[in-house]
Length: 265
Ligand SMILES: NC(=O)C1=CN([C@@H]2O[C@H](COP(=O)(O)OP(=O)(O)OC[C@H]3O[C@@H](n4cnc5c(N)ncnc54)[C@H](OP(=O)(O)O)[C@@H]3O)[C@@H](O)[C@H]2O)C=CC1
Ligand SMILES: O=C(O)C1=N[C@H](C(=O)O)C[C@H](O)C1
Image 1 (spheres, rainbow, N blue to C red):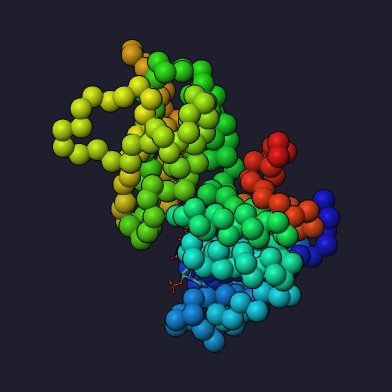
Image 2: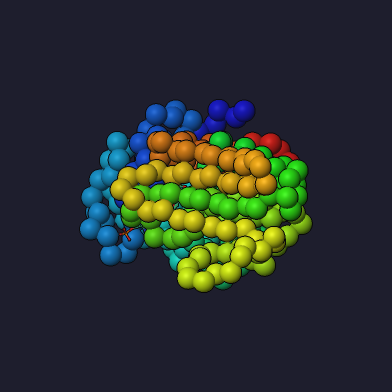
């Protein structure tokens, strides 16, 4: 692996993940944070952030000297950063969730000119879980009903989580289904019995839960529960920093965490 120092800019630098990224990056000799971007109306503008004491700015042109921009902000901001990074020829890693089809379209366009990795979850465990879920879904076939439960902190703004959707897509792949055609996002009232070709989602929001996901495969007489529990946000930050180093210098295109971890692009 190259020991060349890479420069990264962080968008959403004053947020929970931004703060964690600045903290984790400070321990790395092979990576330097060159810009800390915050929201246009942020009270942090002009103030030092993180152990690096970087002065926060909302001016996106501050990312110009970076090799990679790492974004953990909002869907609109993510799409805007992708457009800017593509114009400036800067690789992009994003963990932002809750993206619409239009946001994904903006990322697709950007990935025509830069390497871009979007991952709903940068932990190794969740990316392993994705494989296990597809395998289990295929193995049981329609003998098992699949339900996905996720729990997060009270400040999370999107639901279901990006990770729950990613696991839902893996379960659907195992059955050769399209998630959008089989997802049940909520149940209330006289719902009638469950369909065979259905993947249900349940969501909990409370206090400081970092992130928990369980995929239930419920068959007659047995039940398989595949669970991941994140107990420290640092795992996401470390994964995103690892992704930034891996992505720097790659050809333009869309990349996923599984390309880094398993090399099955
Ligand atoms: N892929 C993964 O592994 C993980 C993904 N996430 C996802 O990352 C995203 C951020 O999560 P989290 O850090 O908890 O959320 P926070 O709300 O704590 O942080 C987001 C930050 O982005 C800022 N922001 C909003 N708009 C802009 C903009 N235009 N330019 C620069 N900054 C902006 C916000 O500022 P302000 O508050 O002033 O609006 C805020 O400080 C979410 O989508 C979350 O789901 C989270 C953890 C792990
Ligand atoms: O908002 C969060 O906190 C998290 N969001 C990601 C998601 O939506 O899946 C990843 C992780 O679970 C934490």
